[in-house]
Amino acid sequence: SPPNDDLYWPDSSFYHVTYRAFASKYCICDADPRHGRILSASMVFRGKGSLKEVDESAFRIYNRGSPYLVEWICDNLKACLCEIPQSDWGLSCVLNSNSTAVYEVFEGILEGFRGIFRRKAFLHRYIGEGMDEAEFIHAEDNIQDIISEYRRFQDATAEDEEDDYAYEYDENY
Image 1 (cartoon, rainbow, N blue to C red):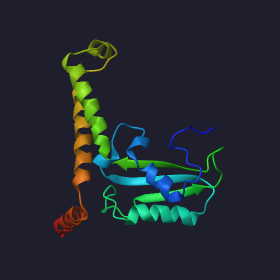
Image 2: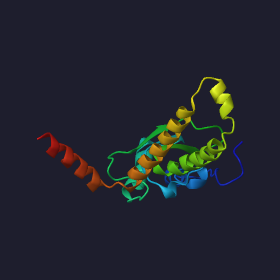
Image 3: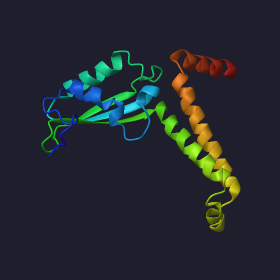
């Protein structure tokens, strides 16, 4: 049977389920989606309903000017419906999204890695297995690059994207 908390609302509408899917307390990783912007997302609804309701709920989120969705990627929110409900649940939704807020998780990983690497903790085990210390430095640089890219995408706008294309166009001719 479903849990006795606010996850289970037997009379939930598609809009309420969609709205809750974007809430930070339902995220799997420890990144608050309000601190970033969603680059792309897919929503899979499960339960009784119609594709029209699915499209309307996704359309509301997409077109209400949500600050969490980037405007420079068109059609970055997709939704579908499986009409076979989960047992004892009326309607459920899974949201898979690529959010720039994940840079917070990478920053935590990088901070922990730097602390361990600075003390050379466990390094002898990896070197004994054939790894080189330079590989750890390279991995640290890669994580820092990922953080930088997500921050760049978070601050990007549609005008920035148009400027990049104009620059590439001018360069070719």
